Length: 207
Image (cartoon, rainbow, N blue to C red; front, side, top):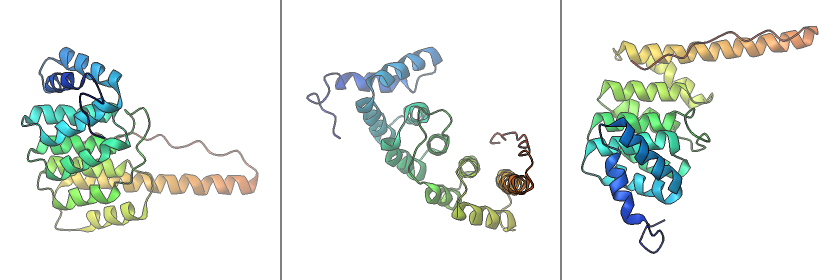
């Protein structure tokens, strides 16, 4: 979709709103976010375009953050490109977070980006970006690629980042709890007993 004055009469106003996404006054940023949210699809397109082209890194970060809460699958290509190629680490990190975090979105993304997150972990030289990617990977649905990669990460002596391994270990432990809970439910069902209560779990923050 290409935004022009013909396709949306307020297109010239998007630039000013997007510029405010990089501001330091959180109230003004919030007002700009709300104005863009109300516009919908054309605004999301304009935000995605700014994420890839705006010269100010704070604005690009604000664009990626906007997509964390108001993005949909149409935003994935721009977020993926930013996660791979933005020259500023904190922009890449927020782009990775916006891809991986589904809790804040109106509807979870349906795009499969497990391979992208693995690529970021392997290639990005910034520790915080890699930790964010491992955390985002740890939040995805069970997947053979995910399990195999996390196992290699935990067992690789060349990986010295304790933060990465802590997050990977947390996901493996969560998978093990899920397998044990499933086994216990099946055993209880065969014995005619009530299903056991699930174990509580605490989500770890990215360091």
